[in-house]
Length: 132
Image 1 (cartoon, helix red, strand yellow):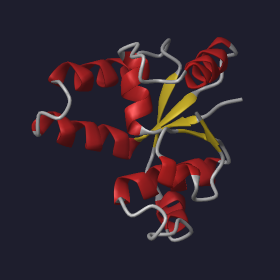
Image 2 (spheres, one colour):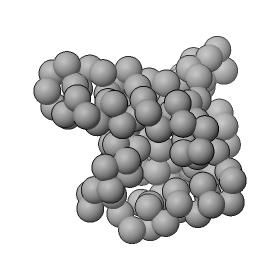
Image 3 (cartoon, one colour):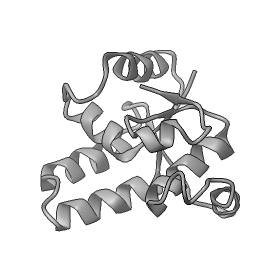
Image 4 (tube, one colour):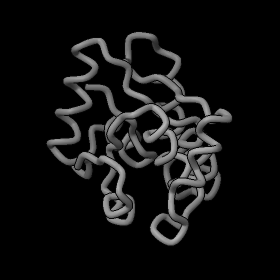
């Protein structure tokens, strides 16, 4: 089964961080091994640029993300923020998920019909299928 990764999940996966749960890592690796594309919302790239600019993540994290998305063998694919995702944002409760990048990532998972890998408790409680 393929999945969508939230921003922190993809960054933790790429740096092999212990912050990523074992279940999440196994799910990602299994999907890649089976040749299923693991989706990363375009908003996660934008969010990582912002976090790197504010020095909340190292610049190397942005480079790793860009390199992985450019590498056809990584198994990671960018999911566009298109009209369908934009329309799906309205289905994500602002009171449950107040952060707009998070709402876009949730909408991406909903639109693609895939579970979302996230540690975020608000998202886990928002009625979307999650893996952690």
